[in-house]
Image (tube, rainbow, N blue to C red; front, side, top):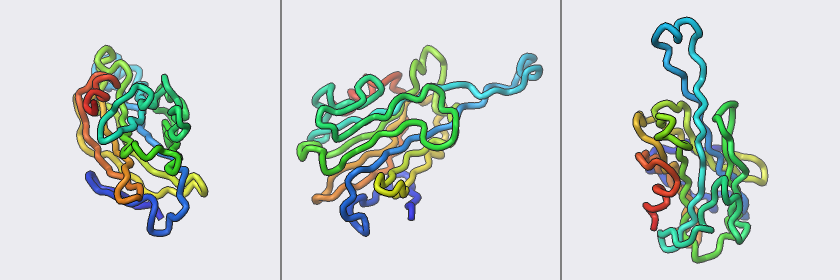
Length: 201
């Protein structure tokens, strides 16, 4: 049964009935924003969802720090050299139900020197397109057991994120030999992935 997490809540992924868990799917989702209904044109043509291209990335940290570009798994680098973390590809609009982007992690294959994997999402060209997370609805991150597609936990981001262009959704981290997940939900004004990454350097 899936655990519904609150901001800042932590849950174990590899104990309490999850023995043998290795491959997990980190699903991230969001819905298209509704366009502004105001003005003459809005009245004539109605409201259409506005496509916002959100990009999910995984940052693999060693000692809490991002030490190498190969440890950034995103649409331009879909797999870590170890094969332990894979990005399943870019969704350009956020249209449709379910996960918009997925990152697959082989927990037992993550080298011991990596202590945490941070999951971030930024809006592609947010500044140029004048878009922000306040224009996005129903954002979530969830962890799924790939053996049976059973959802282990989910965190729905429900705060007001007006003006925010990036989001630290959550992190998987090692603690006393087990993997845990922490629901973070921290919004930032970072204009892109490079600025997000600098937070961990």
